[in-house]
Length: 347
Image 1 (spheres, rainbow, N blue to C red):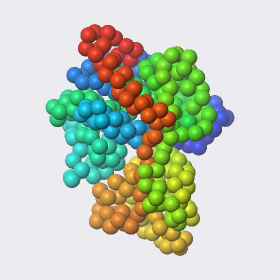
Image 2 (image 1 turned 135 degrees about the horizontal axis):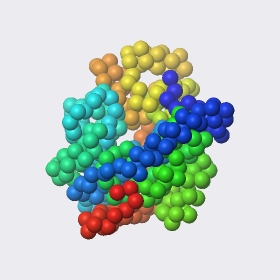
Image 3 (image 1 turned 45 degrees about the vertical axis):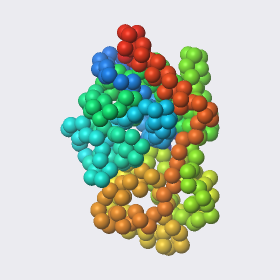
């Protein structure tokens, strides 16, 4: 199974997108109205929202990690707000890496919890209060740009420079979560990750509005462990092709590739098939950090399998070294204005 997003979403709008346009129009109208009328609860700490305009992977998680690292370097105590995936969290829960698994909290919270405390809950305001009680003084919200009922001080939109916003149609005819114009009203800056011109439309609109545009690339952190190796690569993320491309750039020779759905929870049959395919190809297995944490938090069989798999670690490298610090500074400044009653769009 590949990503849940149908391939036609990421090409020029064709008859399928236009046939679904009436439904997209209704979905977009509801989404735009929800964003405009949302009553967002204020919390007693700066809130930086890292979101995207579309469904599918854009690089939010490594961006959040990079911003956590930058916040720590400034002497702040960051905490991450996540809705999570997998099991339902009825009450706010701070991820415990010694106890929690992907089925309970999701793969992204497990990965993020290596860098900062992570509160998992659909109720972001309750999660924020819990993190503040835990001593966090700077909150980074992973996703929730369109739907979270919390007042964020700064919204950074992450976009894939190659895929951009696809055919620019709203769900179900395209990948957009709401119409572009309505979403960009609530954005403070854009981060384009990777190479390509797919994000040019959004970048131009952002620049015309006088808002900052940042650039970054995904860079392997352990290329020396991968380079020269022969692998069967597999991934269950929003855009598996991005991972396969990164593996090749890191110097890996790929003898096969397997794509699973985003946040895929592997079964014993899955890992058996992967092991057999790698053996036939005379290759080792290679996967992403997200997939690795899912495997490592599973059954004994999955954990044993995880020990045999190489992991390509990817980090966001900003074109401007001072970009993370600029984003954090803007969030802190906006929080100070909020404390003194100065409102902003989206508040």
